[in-house]
Length: 473
Image (cartoon, rainbow, N blue to C red; front, side):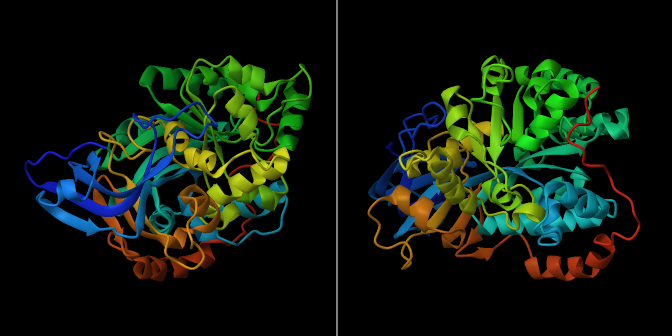
């Protein structure tokens, strides 16, 4: 702990909480480790200019002038959760396409419906999604969708932090890639620095080799993250090998995308442990860029897929952040749920009750997720100099008492509804479960009359065809 200086008024002082801490610099250990996660009782957090100035004791700040003070006795302070891969406007499609294989889900439902999207549909969906995430303790999200100026507008109004990328397919020609770059360059640094941006090619099966290589070069020239779906399931990987002789990860490597900053959604179809012919771990081991994966286990369970191999990725130092994907497949944007399911599915997949401990799951939810979205030095830990993105969690409910181990309680007992207060850049977005920046009834009132036109599939159009063997050339 450090001592808060007695100077001009702080913007915010939080007192009396138990604080989740990482090791001294907040960076944690290697991927998969517990990162020195601990808990300090009866602490105080001082925020100034959107940054954590100090973590100290209530006594040390008793006389410190502050614009706002929060009495957090009985609450736990932790870094805000990070949704590393989602499609926020798809909350408007929550529950519309259920109990389907992925090809029917895309071809018969989602891609026909998305031809109907208007800019206002996108903005209303993004606003509703931001409200859901704030209530669930999410302070940052990475979005990959269309009409992203509208998602940026929703992000700014909500007060959240986000990495945003305008998705594109090769079927759009050069215009799709150029629009994604234009958006990324125009919007990075928007919303007072809360918005960062990425290039967002959809996937190796919808974006050809030439466009992937061009994307890698644009990312290198402009210092941009690339956010892409790849190796989503084993069937995709098998189809890619049959069509091109390469796995999706080998295709990314050939395009140069493993040599830039890259966020890969899903990766449940990584080829590993089956022999040397196609070893994605060996390919990833040759990366020179900062490569990370995002895992969204609820959707994998629904589609009957395997899960992201966290243990294998940890063995080569690749971080894995937590995600929800879109609510059309995941039904919620609840990263707390993703954290619980990640811990449990990893134990089941590895047949090892000692793998993915509660502290390891918290590491994925905090520092690894921050690295995945390119913000590893700014968020993901409560430490002096980090942005003041944090949540206050109530652990006094009957489902969380008694608390023998804070980590186990957070990962396996607590729920997103236990988040009482959500703070981004030192600004309170939700206090005592009351949203302060968004009007949910108003958003829903405008969205509902639009749903019939949005969800009509009678026109027979699709924005794209799902064919996991396509894309390469």
